[in-house]
Length: 338
Ligand SMILES: NC(=O)c1ccc[n+]([C@@H]2O[C@H](COP(=O)([O-])OP(=O)(O)OC[C@H]3O[C@@H](n4cnc5c(N)ncnc54)[C@H](OP(=O)(O)O)[C@@H]3O)[C@@H](O)[C@H]2O)c1
Image (tube, rainbow, N blue to C red; front, top):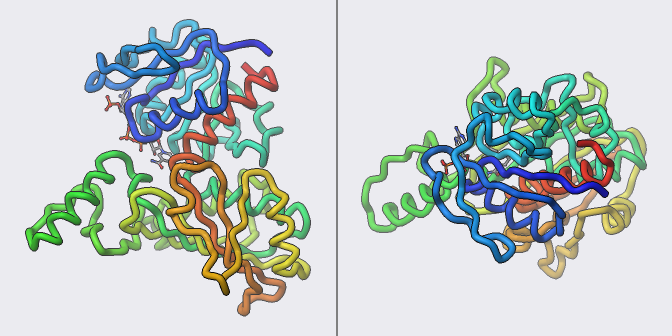
């Protein structure tokens, strides 16, 4: 297998730090690695595999001789540097929403639609965090029985909104407990002891952009028909890390909770914790810091014909971003696509 020169763009951010850890955990072999940020963090030190690296400010020349760029520096930065990376023959694996819905950009969850990677033209997109964990759960089920309808409600952690949002939860909580006023900046409402039914901006159809990302990205990744009904409600909750989702699926034919449990127990990247009578079901405490998507509360849905309801929890920084990015990198190396 050929080795690549790798750059981590946004290395000082929440996702970038996780990417760095996972490159090590998955044993990604490389010739050279470099860590890039904005001018703000340039000069900071990163200790990685026994060596100290100096973070560099990302500039077009930073991508000379770089084969694979793992980017988590926001959509504007990705749009700025994508042409520079591609022009130099590199492959951009991008965490932002900049290119996800473009026709010639594969949107990939590793182990779900790896074949789509072969169609890349220099840019590969990593899905939104709430979509990501759902794909690993849905794919093995719809391989067995076709899906007819999907309703997802998300309970999303603040880490999904970056470092500043994590700090805002801490500071807002302290202020609230001390009876002090607090000026929220990252969220439209106070996040401490609250649930906010808005992630990203509202669109003309009354859904938020985050909710429509789940709808559109799910269709693209799973190659679903345009008219298959999907609906999502996304809420921000005062949890540091780990997204939870209540998922209701209507299938074309009957599938029992026992069958679903059995399929998921044997599926890649899934861990089933499902014994409610013993209070065993997944929470973000199980999922934060580890790789599996946890599934529980698998039961027959009472509102749909052939319906199943389940609860799924995952580390949004891992499967929702960094882990999938590095897994895609692993596939690009294995499939020799750079
Ligand atoms: N958090 C999640 O769960 C999640 C999930 C999926 C996707 N994403 C996406 O991943 C991206 C980063 O998210 P995050 O949560 O890690 O944000 P973050 O903690 O705010 O980190 C942002 C990173 O981007 C760098 N950066 C900003 N502007 C730059 C520029 N002009 N040139 C080079 N580097 C620049 C920052 O460098 P400085 O340190 O110099 O500011 C920092 O390293 C976003 O696009 C986000 O939508 C996040």
